[in-house]
Image 1 (cartoon, rainbow, N blue to C red):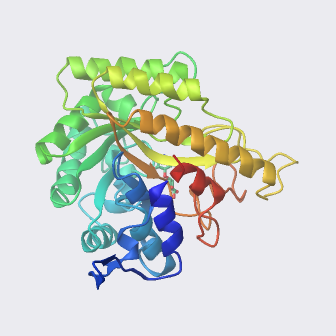
Image 2: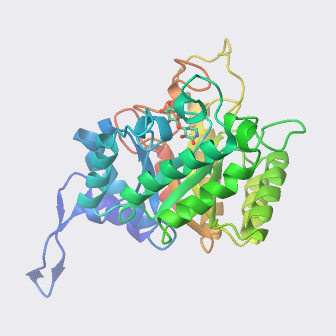
Length: 366
Ligand code: XIL
């Protein structure tokens, strides 16, 4: 594969020189030609979620080499950005936007309406009681207007509503405070407010376990209803917190086909491949045989899983408009503390020294 050869040739040197008619042409920085983003240039942008610590040092050069899209891992979520009503903490989010602009990257916004990482103030009145529906919807609108409005020239897509479908059992929607106060109304409203704030932004619903047949059925029912009502929703975000055991190729293809039929674009918004059984929401105990080591067997399974997943994603490039990893390298993953606190995980394409893993080679070998 041509790109792979360029990649190998360029490792260790800081500039690629191209010779033509015996003349040395302009030197091009290696960082701009030899990463995942270049190999996938004809398919979809490749992104990573970042924390403020990633913006400098070793991570920043890796990011600029490998990725052309960024998501804020936490700093644009409701409580980090508006910890108290009308008190905004713009600094960390602005710094990320500056990094994105300086390096010519795309940026996705994450997330406007979620049951986690949202301040209690959102749902409470001055006496500590629960606000009524009108008040909550007004606060949601004000939050969305402020955040989407501030970054409208910099963010091309937003995860507007995150994780509102219930996991198991009969329930359709998650029993969150949003749902308890407004019923399902907050969902359509969030999309409407986001569209009012930036009519150019691509607006996503985002969820985990979105290839799981039961949950998919409920998500599809909601998306269909929203589209029928004319709600401005443009995309389905599959988080992609998967594992070496899940999903199967058939499950993944079925899910992509199903969401595609809704006429929405699709993104994988938070990709990582856990080396342990169970996905998000899964088992929360560490089992006795888990030694916190990345075994040869896990490595082989992970290589095969990454290879399969990217093959399928390439097949759906007509509807997939982005693939984003959740975190940068195995040096730090949110899965080191979720769902089991302190259990080291190895879910990404770069190892703890930020070197490309064998799974990386499998992903670019096509
Ligand atoms: C996670 C972050 O990675 C953690 O740092 C934070 O403590 C909790 O949230 N689904 C989402 C993401 O939509 O926002 C979550 O991010 C991971 C699961």
